[in-house]
Image 1 (cartoon, helix red, strand yellow):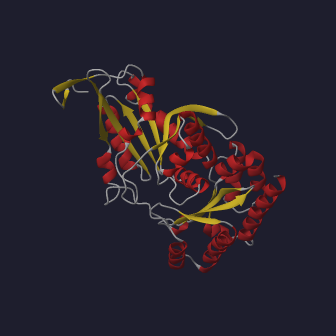
Image 2: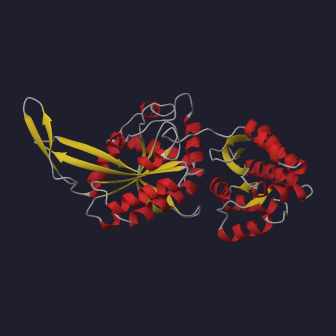
Amino acid sequence: MTDQPVFVLGSELQALEPAGFETEAEFQELLARHPRVLDFGSLSDGQPLRLVLVAREMGVPTSAENGPTYWLDHLFVDADGVPTLVEVKRANDTRIRREVVGQMLDYAANGARYWPGALLQRSFEETCVADGRPLEEAYGELLGDRSPEDFWSMVEERLAVGQMRLLFVADRIPLELRAIVEFLNRQMRQTDVYAVELTQYRGAGDLRVLVPRIHGEIATVAKSPSGRRTTQRTTRADMEEEMQKRLDPAVLRAARALLDHATARGRLEGGTAKYPSMSVYYRVAGRQVPIWTLSLYANPAKDELSFSFGSINHHLSLKGAAAFADSLPPVPGLEQKLEAQREKGYNGWPSVSLAALAAEPNAVEGILSAIQQLMDGQEASV
């Protein structure tokens, strides 16, 4: 923080002196009430970014069975459905140098796994009620022509692929943190990482000036030629074109059977990674649950089908995830990964190569049958 004052010129010149935040709670309250100080950049349609508070002190679980283990200072979201995780520290807190980075990565990794759309929606609406803000007004900034359920499902999907912002906010950003932020921003393709230095100046009475400085933007610009994240999603046509070029007939039939079933019975959602991918949501027990993702990598030998057991566990219980695992067909490579999931509580992404799937007689039919059993069994238990 510089010791130079800033000057406000009205009927006379007034000097505002730099002043720290007295407590971290004061700092946090300021951001919760005035997120505009963190609005930099733009949305995918070019409109200015506007962050909306989902929750202050957002609980972060580390398993599906337990309550929150950690507490994130602030969770915001924008109209593109991109979540923004904010951790606040004052300059005199020594954790601002390196410890806060480990904290934030913990929050991001576990939030991506254990924050379903329904929880985020409830947290947002409870925050609005507590702040005395009408829901219609709050949603007016976010929804467009979408329903609240569709919007929060989109937020959940962005979390699942790691599409989020991580903001470290302090009244002074040390060089050590700035270096880490710029390094992370260069390495992380789906996640933007920033450090925001928010300097406060005080004048006579209640007059305050807040000056944000953003660190990390240069690394973000390097991620895409446009200077902001591209969000073009893989389409079914994209997948079909890529599969026809690279897959042998047996593997192509297996992949098409999976995608055809998803088109008829579920909802396909294209991925945003550099490689083509599509995830499938099936309606189970009255909610849209992500079940599997088909990914086509640069090396065709690595093309795979992966199962979203963390989401299945969260939405449908540990018992439901275990029953689904037991109903999947015995495919070499997948069996061992499912066994590991049993020991870990069904929170990962066990996968099977498309080649192994195509080589095993009736394996695809067995997977589709397991999905049908999951849908029928859960509906019957409701």
